[in-house]
Length: 459
Image 1 (tube, rainbow, N blue to C red):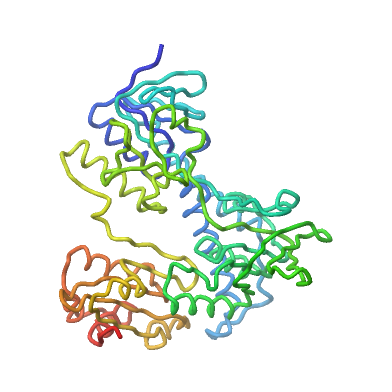
Image 2: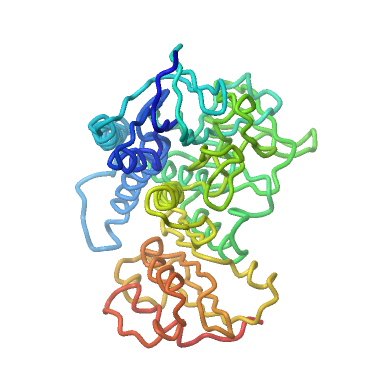
């Protein structure tokens, strides 16, 4: 006989613990299913560990620049990769323990370990036990996509998940994928001391971004000695004298690219293939993402999909917002929607990229009249004082309503400062509000009013 609960939550990513807390505080009994470890991608092999590694790499980079700041050091700068990994592991474990303690301490909640699989629309099996609930929330996340390339099964390769176990310095790291995950790892390991080559199939890095952003990022990485190969086609790999040889050109006589280690960073796929969704009648798209409506409901009544698995956002903050939407609508009588939120994300290279709203390319494609403001980081006093003047900032505004359409801040603290523009967008306030504001000197944000005062028609 199946165990009966008011709600079942599958997966322990960012949306699940707070949702479990809201449900149990409302008096509902909850079955909480996890097959591997608490916290999901963000805590275990995503945001928290990678940004911890980025911080170590930044420290090494700045230490090597000591002379630029008039600082003398007694000897050469070294990196102890075992210590770097140990620091990362300690921070991750504290986060995992925090999530686990929170969830396990909730009243009327039972934790089940194992792979969940639907037997019916509202009945699930896990480790030979059967659970039932009228409300089911799927939050199983995703995993790295591994392509079917020639020779790939013959060589060892790394993904963002297995990179978390690396406690050594690769001699020459080949990073396949010139987008967000790949670029963060490429820069951090170059700063640790590896030779790094990025291999990108497209004509430019981070193709989602505008051309000027892509070009600036390319310049930032190349300045640090990272090799970049664009327009790589006919990809294939194989063993080569203790390392890995990669074919990146279609011509047979073209020499291969040889490295010591290979990192695949070309996308992710949802963890939906082992859930038995077809048995429950839950619809997925052609890539395996669960189809949801604007309030994250699946086509089966009483079943929701949150986080990466629904294809409506691939970030920790979108997963958390998914929780807020579901909880508000289910428990507070709200009517919040996915389409209420404004797209926002960051690329955590150094300097970072903060992005909100529409890109310049999207604004042009929309055909609307718009204003554009830009300013190079070289004009920002705080950037000059910190010795970090690479990048630029730009903002796009609707010429009629004067509201901000989007922004890209590639530069010192861009990942933080961009929130001031994001909040302006949520307030639906005209850009002139910020243009007339007095900001603190010396900061990076003080140049935002200056930039907004110089808005010109987008040509």
